[in-house]
Amino acid sequence: MSEFHQEGYITTIHGFYDLFDPEEHLARLEKKLEEFSKHMCISLLLPSLYDEIHAPQVLENIIDQINRVNYLCSVVVALGGAKEEKEFREAKAYFGRLKKENRDVKVVWVEGPRVRQVFEKLQEQKIPTGVPGKGQSVWITLGYLFAAEVSDVIALHDCDIVTYDRLLLGRLIEPTANPNNDFEFCKGYYARISPTDMEMKGRTTRLFVAPFAESLAIIMHERHHHVLEQFFRYHRTFRYPLAGEFSFLTRLARAINIAYDWGLEVSTLSEVYTRLTPKKIAQIDLCKNYDHKHQELSEKDANRGLHRMVVDIAKFYLNYIRSHGMPVDDAFIDMLQQTYYSTAISFVKSYSDDAESNDLAYDRHQEELTVRYFRDFIATAWKQARKEKEGTQITSWNRVIYSAPDIYDDLLKAVERDNE
Image (cartoon, rainbow, N blue to C red; front, side, top):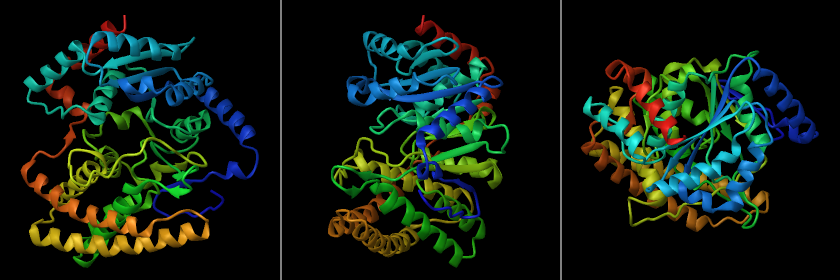
């Protein structure tokens, strides 16, 4: 983006390269990363569903782009949705094409019997491991990377990015891999504009997370709860808090709890907030535009689509508030719903004006209807939060090894055996 605004809380790394020659920028970027990789191991973690290997128009390009870089020492796939061994073997062969000289490739079969034995051992020790999903897959795969003891920097991105190229990967990694700065965590951001529909995407970020965090910041300010106000102002600093792309130092990754549901991204930002000073946190403009698969609203089913996503995110924030000294009751939720709604409607007006000036299609009526649904989903999140006292975070691996000191050996053996 051709602007240079800094919020002042964390560092924003803009996409100035786009004003000049992106190809020259890519060449210089990869040269730097190759130099960094001589002194550190940079790993890439790819959460992938088995079904995604049957979407070649997307995943084939991702594999091709990754194979053009030479600075990764390992690629580890967190494979979910593979119920049978033949499916795992198919996925292992598919991702095996990423293996090259000086680069190891492993596929963690999350539903496989050997990895499931690791889960069972942890559960016997009364260590919560969440429920199957992206968060759980990421958590167990991070455990394998820690057990292997080779990674200094870990980057993570999804496998459904339609507009993926290796510039995105390089920019995602550079801030945390660069020994000349002080960043330990870097979050990606980008524009989400459909080139075919000529309209804004990213409804959950635009219409829920941004106005919801803003509403909570306003409420905490009015109630003089400045600790929580600062927390929500921090979340508002991120331009795309639900982006699935981030990189971090391994020592930080070992220490953070991982949410097993759709709260994964906001939970990760919260963990980083707790453990790092702002000067060690960055966000970076990854690409001109970003497109991936889109979720349905699913207004009548709380277990699917944006409905489930909004509920999980709201539930995380409500649990965070309660765990930091703020009582939550039905009256608070009613007030929060009203504050969110009025705030979100003002956001809709801003999006409408933005779209109008940029000749984008914008269905303001539908956006306002979506805000109404999201408002009602907050009540659903509160009902669930009252029942789930433990929250939705899986404990950090630094904590796990105190209760199960030999778990790394078990996990390492399980993954190595699966990949023989």
